[in-house]
Amino acid sequence: MFAFVIEKLSFWFETAECRRREECLAQSSDVVQLEQRICSLESNGYNA
Image (cartoon, rainbow, N blue to C red; front, side, top):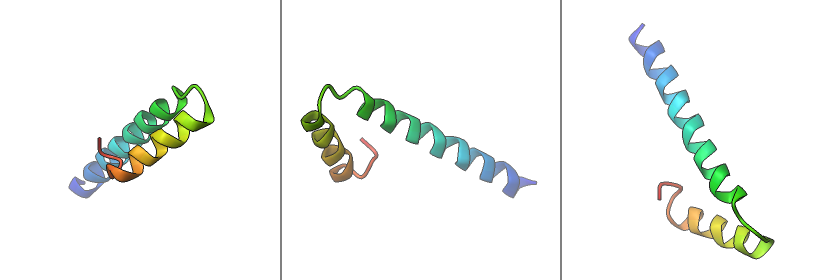
């Protein structure tokens, strides 16, 4: 039971983080800004 709860929480946090990154990238106004944001996410380990 405990493992099930941990697994569900992990999935929830992963989904929330993915949504946060996608929202950040979606705010780009052009391709150059999108590439800059992608590079920033990659260099910060997707945790910034």
